[in-house]
Length: 474
Ligand code: ASP
Ligand code: MG
Image 1 (spheres, helix red, strand yellow):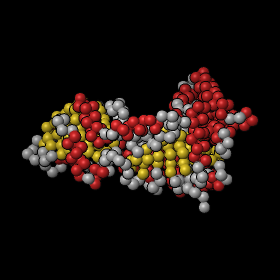
Image 2 (cartoon, protein in one colour):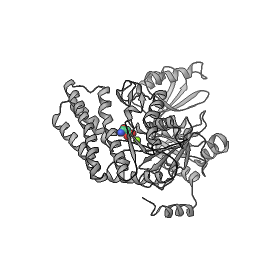
Image 3 (cartoon, protein in one colour):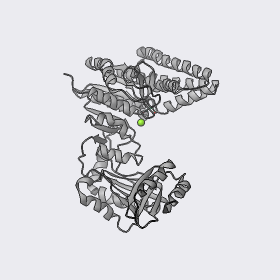
Image 4 (cartoon, protein in one colour):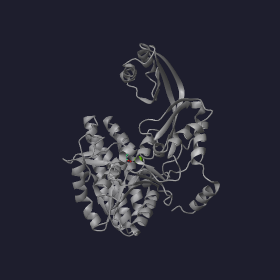
């Protein structure tokens, strides 16, 4: 029996040009030299290409012929330049023809859009798919040229989705069948399977895409179908951080996060990876590792379905600014039956989602992100309650599975903020976070206080880490 494959996904900046693809080759080459695991490489479009393709589709709707011609020329030149730098001349001509064929498809699609003066979701998917189709062609050829035998896999034959264009959902069983048919033979032949992310097709073969940023999702779907040993997400940062680097000078990289912790952090805009996109992998206990293609030896962040093992009690502290707090006090003596329902109905009616909630016997405090409907909300609430609101608030949140197990930890988090006027403190059912609402003016100091308290490193370790990183870059 074959060993479980390793899936390596490279984002747009990690395939941006010949230099980036050169780093990819070094990384994949190192993995290929380790005995055993078959490799699947999933790639995004070169950085910025998806945006450009979609812009070309709108240019076609407007019949901006010159812009389209110029756009096509630039896209093709960018890919061919990388191709000629990476692939030996005897192979480059053949690969260039394959890449050209995709750009010919693109030209035809844009002509159709111009005739119809409409880019339907269906057409947009066909246009956007070109980015991953050509980047994957290029990477497969570059690997082969570097002596790492690779097979190009057509994502449209591999990921079977529903027909909801632009945000298509994969169909598990048909995809498992298609992955076995398209990818397994390449792996069995000892080749590296290279497939474009983001792209799929319906069972009828109509091209779809999984939604922006969907290449991580592709990697997880393929990894799940192949029962991969691990999925690596190669990007341009070291991993998930212990705090917001705009506030904390030197946040640490979180070595290991549970999927639940990663999900809690996602709300705070941890842009590295959206946990929902790796759900297919996590559901099958396949670990996902975030790694930096510019610093291939940095350990990265490991995300697993089980609780994390690491040397800090918390996973990270996160924050959100520009929050508005609304305090609602029942005008009756006590909270009458139906009070909470009416409170939430008021927010619902004005299509505003509520984030943090705390309640007492007579009042409810909530925070909202979007206060564009605040006047209407206050008016609705005032029918049955006294309402105060305060803009310029912030949410500070400590996240860690340990908060469940160790009740003292929550108290320590709140204790570390002694002296700060905390306006709301909440720990909800998951008990994986302690969420604190305070004035935005206090946020930076509060974040520093928590980070110092829970992620303080002995100076010697910091120095050791820094010197061990020197000269390690590929
Ligand atoms: N290229 C696609 C995008 O830019 C998908 C991805 O990169 O994950 O959204
Ligand atoms: Mg991405």
